Length: 346
Image 1 (cartoon, rainbow, N blue to C red):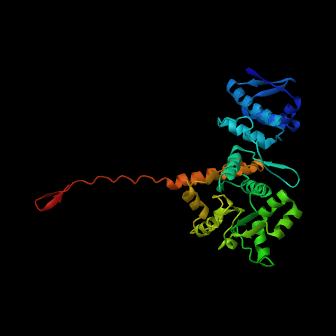
Image 2 (cartoon, one colour):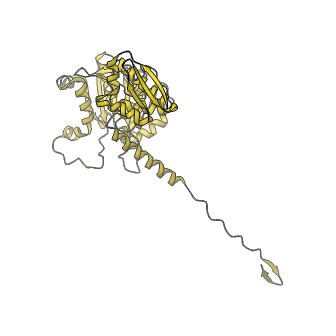
Image 3 (tube, rainbow, N blue to C red):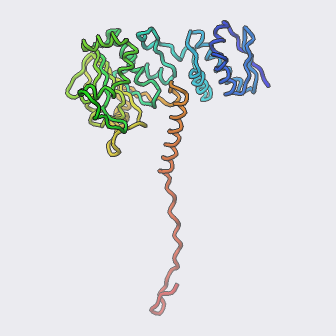
């Protein structure tokens, strides 16, 4: 049994790291089979030497977050545990170092994982950004936050949000109302994100003035979009023709963000995804960034992360089975026949 100590400057930081009823502390102790004791001005860790080093890195990272006033929850702890196990260095201030946007209720929107931080940086630095990853990684929400920040800073005059009107296995044509009423269910996630950023009253005001436009992808054909921040959501359900059409809507002073999850394609089996093709075609082009988020970047309920990982393992297993081809059975050598006296003999 080995012991290590971590000096603590402020007792309130320890309370933030430990969490409500020490729930965060229990996650760390269970993950590395260590014991952590609060000694007032220091934390004392006891356990195996290798595990102590990992636990110390995790707690130091959490203390750094607490010192910056960051909220620490179970998701933050699990993500730091993931980074430490993977052997990745977490420099001070790497998470949540920049506020993407402030919501209507005054809540700062920040990246919660290194993958999300890279995604936000790519949006700021590039004209076209493709964010690809599973559900719950914040692709759409962070893109909308970046669009609102650019709009408030007067970098763009309009925010245009669009997505293909493809049903996820259900037919919605029976819904009552006009065309806008029928497509509203497809666009609801975009509405929700805008309501969070602007508030309902401000959102409706900008919508009436034409500063905000939320429309299905079919409405983009034939247009040139200048001085706009354009977001294409659920891009995995675009055809290759739709994707090319959308990309060529780019006007002067505009920026584009394309988001999607290639594991949730709702197109017919014989129709290729425009997003999958765009990832291949646009890779390496100047001023175009492709950000790949993973299950480690999921910021929803921990069960969402586990579900995604379970499906990924199943897909990998099926892929291995499909690629495995058993060697054909060896043929038994046939005896050589020789002709003797008008007859063949083995």
